[in-house]
Image (cartoon, rainbow over all chains, first blue to last red; front, side):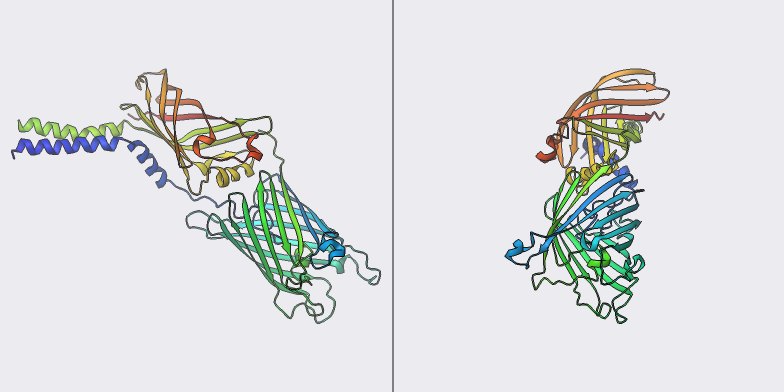
Length: 297
Length: 182
């Protein structure tokens, strides 16, 4: 082959190379420079609602958003046909949750169970990021509860004695787009306990998670473990709850089953008398409605 | 003869780099989309659009991270990413196409052009054709366009419960400012 021929072949290759590089090469160069400039973003939607079932999640309302939460539990499933298997009775917690900033939330609630008031602050300490960096989201939650039910046989029960505190560390990870898990160590303090054998300071740990099976529905489970030798004078059990989340726009609707009747942490963690095995199961629902209070821009 | 061949090879090698130098890049372009219904106003804007234009070949391309769209309502932003465009699976939306009409970068002026190409969103590609304005002014090339896009064209399913809150056709606004490099 002549030198001219060789050069011609090389030239053709060069020309072909250029032509094929041109098609879509603009987009490729864009995507390359985009990947080079990629910054880590926070993981969103670890949970749909601010509660797994009873336990709070790391999620909180955005700044200047208000969540109205209605938590409702019917009576015990094993309370017989006379009580229509629990549907005749109900306990209710009404809650308001407000986002002071995107990371700080303040909330109040009132439960019909023991006529309990609760107030809490939740702060997002860490946020999980996409593609490495921060592996978990961590929030800290402090709750104060005070039950106001009249107890004429115990006239000494003043507000101080009725007050209890819960400090919880919420550690969650969105493992896949569908599966999120949360571990919640809790430290509870009761100003008054029934006997000297009972501990005023109680430690517990909560395990919870959700699995999304469609884009707008998920199954949730929650198990709150109370190590023994802390609550002694009354028979209490670990709280176990199952839920089914349905999200529609600004609402999250949860159908739940739980052996806890109460919905405040100082009560469901360490004062759950019922067990699933005996059928002490409360059916109910959580409804959360988001209101955006930001002025329209 | 050999000299001529060398010259041709030289040209072939240099030409792509010339074409390359004529590419204008922007990293802070703007894309916004808007929906207006009786029930809900939706507004989402992104100021981190990567855009490139090659006046010599009249080719144009955009790429944008969907997570960068900022909504007025934070919950809408979460639903947009989680339920509609699924930005964890398909993080980017891209456009690749070309424009018609001559634009002289060396002279200030306003040029009406037609842009035609493929818009990729949510792993679906749909053709888009829209009039646009390219303005050369003070060493900048500013591209402005507005067109309509239908969510259903990009396999984005909207539940019937909220369908009335979202416009059948979104208005998409694009505004890119390229600095003309010599």
